[in-house]
Image 1 (cartoon, rainbow, N blue to C red):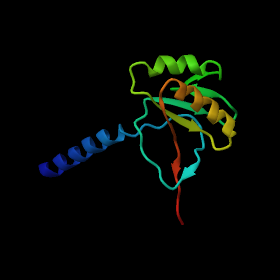
Image 2 (image 1 turned 180 degrees about the vertical axis):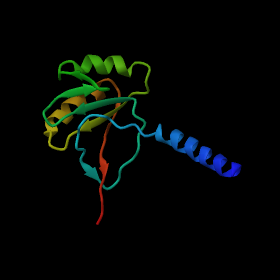
Image 3 (image 1 turned 30 degrees about the vertical axis):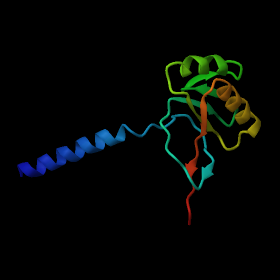
Image 4 (image 1 turned 90 degrees about the vertical axis):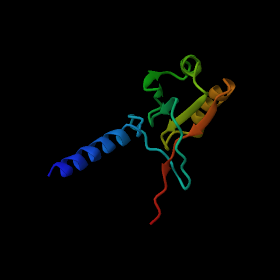
Length: 118
């Protein structure tokens, strides 16, 4: 019986450790789907919701305030910006934010959800 409790505790520890590696954005965004979806460590995230609200690392801001927040967040990081953009948002908003990030020499990645094949 004692070996069974050891196995249960090991499984519990395993699941607790692996659950910390998943970092959801926490904002209500329907991501576009893609056939190939790579996992990128999220240092700085910019989220644009379907009603055109802007968030930098879950801090609400305006389009004009994104540049200042990005400049603060990118200091000390390796310059990776992950864009979480709702699929209903026009592309011009994605281009504006991506342009701001690339002007600060940051790598820009667009977050997608994996495409489900029937």
